[in-house]
Amino acid sequence: MPATRSLQLIALITAIAMIASACGGGGSSDTPTTTGLTTNYDITPQEDITVLDESTVEDRIVASDPAAGEYRFEAGTDLASATVGQPIVIPGEGFGIVREVVDEGGNVLLRVDEATLADVIQDGEVSIDYDVSWDDFDITYEQLAALPGVTNVRVIPGGSSGASSGGFTNISLAEPSTKYEIKFTKDKWSFTVTFEPKDGKLNFDLTASYGTGATQKIAAITGKGWITGFSFLTEALFSDGGPTSLNSEVNGLEGELELQWAAFRTPATTLAQIVRFNVPVSVPFPIPGPLGIPFVLQIKMAGRIVPELTAEDASSGGQWKVSYSSDQGFNFDDSGGKPTGSAKSQDIGVSGDTVTAGLGPAGFGLGFEFPRFELGIAGLNAFAFITMDMYSTSLWTPGTVLSNDIPPCQYGYTKHSAVAGYELKILGWAGVSEQYPLFEKQIDKYLDGEVCTLTGD
Image (tube, rainbow, N blue to C red; front, top):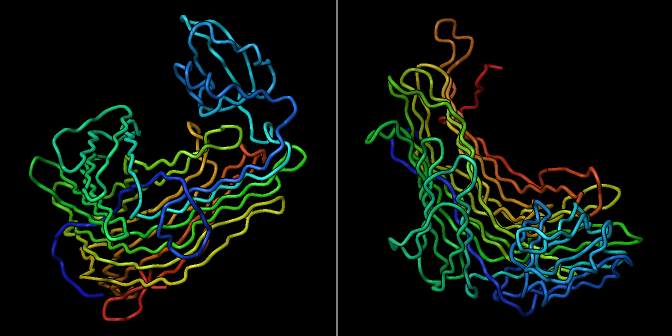
């Protein structure tokens, strides 16, 4: 591991952008060259279900809150078909078990209790096949300024000064060649994310710095890279009023990510707080589901900063790069979950000076999740995700200087993995919740190639 103590900044994470278009599909393992959505909803609904008229919902709904189970319509809307205790679908908005229909505040309010897809679907297949190409798309950003602990969110199309912040704001961006920038803060860290779709790739760059005063910055990170387009495929099967299998895959994905950091302890300030953050923007792909149930695929990004700079004169700098090509996914049935796909290639290594030092044990870790694909019902928590995760470190111990029974050790590693998770209650599998790696690879680096441990074991 090359050595330097220079405290340049830089490293970490991402951005997001996506598409909506209809035409062709194809769950191929090759990176798609055009964008397209194909769905197949060959289902038999439950006999007692009510499906509201789509045009009535579109014309007369005033507000909806799927998480609270509340759908508000204009006064006079006829909801006589909504039978208490029976499943109902509000096309484009949500579904549930009817609790009540009441007049409230000059509106007709439909309240529903939680339901599962098995309450709606007796038998059949739900299949979604989404091809994504960065050369062929429209971008819509959903600003998530209300994330806990995140403040000062701005989304700036094309670097203009006309920013918006607070609450939820949808911003449509029509120029695919324009760079976009998102700024936010979390736990004294100030983040700036830029991205640019170009040459068939989504290029991204995140910088962040940590400061205790108006001018002094004691840590900085950067993450930059790109991803290609991909194919997203999900298939769920139902029989006799219950789910029988779920398959979800992301195929044809290629990417590159480089993480870099520089940080030091000052006499007045140590750095040891673990910070987990979400880039406060996601890319939603609305998908009209069976009977009008609104599915949504979202691409998100998350990260974590793990410093341990409490020893006197502690500092850390590092630079790692990962390039990969992969298919990843899982299937689940009554016998349990199984990973699918594989890493077709994973190239991991240091790409610059990487060293940590101090008068005691010290270290720095940087983690990055991108892209993170989440599938769910609009307005509700996702029921399945597949994510690519990179975690890089640089660690140091001076050993036991007097007794010399533990020699000094300069060590670091990067682990790159694909991870899947699901919470399948909404499909009809009660109590099914799991998360596991689909594949992973770790590369270790030692100063001068001499293998050592931090404990002397």
